[in-house]
Length: 365
Ligand SMILES: NC(=O)c1ccc[n+]([C@@H]2O[C@H](COP(=O)([O-])OP(=O)(O)OC[C@H]3O[C@@H](n4cnc5c(N)ncnc54)[C@H](O)[C@@H]3O)[C@@H](O)[C@H]2O)c1
Image 1 (cartoon, rainbow, N blue to C red):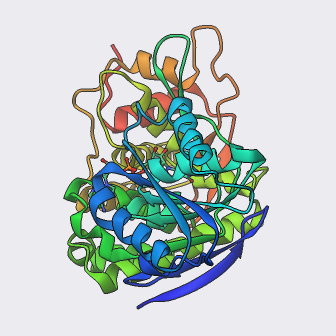
Image 2 (cartoon, protein in one colour):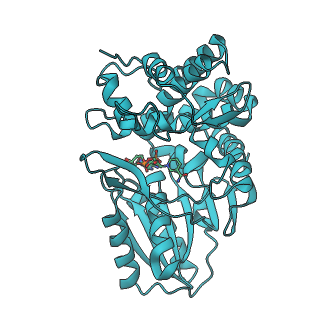
């Protein structure tokens, strides 16, 4: 079922429209200068649709195509987007529109925050992950190489919320199966945080969601999006409760930063949810049956629950910020507290983290 909601995302309110065909309803009046920044995977399809529809409405549109990869999620690409905006003379009354997944949205949001000290941004997410999570909430970002040569995820960025997000699940038609599964990882996360019924919905509609059926995906985007919106509205710039949205991410970012591993963000989040569930058991916040459920939910949507090719656990601990001298160097973990909730803890002992990594198949020699 189509629907829409509006929420306070800090600097402005964000209107989220969930409806098939909504990519052709980007609310930009004529005479505005618009830069459409599109992921190359959808440039000839949905990017073209969006640009043509805006042109037909009388906007002055330029299109800029980017590559959506974690290695290209960089300050350099942000600079290229801004160069395209300067070439197109996008003024302070202009708008950036992203068409693509989470990488595109994060980069375009970041460029919009910087261009002329900030211009309006709207998102047309084309991955399930961006529809249920990344496009909402105003976190923008780019990666940066760390001094040891590894990838520091999302180390750069600003809070720069979109004025509008148009969730058009028709765009999922061309999304590869692997990416559809990734989207379900963030949706499961939202269910674990706030809504057991959402977990049940995902279990009951798994096949429809994985085959991108419109009604099932609309419902998921509305339900999962509203959970994120509720948390963001409470704490837009992550001074407190918003940190729970990082459930599984302390593990996921270590996985993504490990040069020898090649997991997509959603896959790393799925593994991170299983690891976080083990952490909750070790810390006395959850039972073994909760852990079994999380592992089962993650595995049932086709996401990995173990990493047979993981490096030695010591390397992952080090990547997380543990080193030989300190047990925990200010590291914060989001620990699930079933049936639906989580707490942020910065007092997690190393052996609990070792148990969490072991749960997803990491070996400590
Ligand atoms: N800002 C936030 O709050 C937030 C939240 C979660 C994740 N993220 C970020 O989002 C990123 C992951 O996002 P993602 O999973 O959407 O990845 P993505 O943007 O890399 O897209 C995944 C792949 O799908 C392709 N693609 C996109 N739409 C397509 C379509 N409709 N048809 C065919 N191919 C398509 C892309 O080219 C890419 O190869 C990560 O960098 C993560 O850090 C940000």
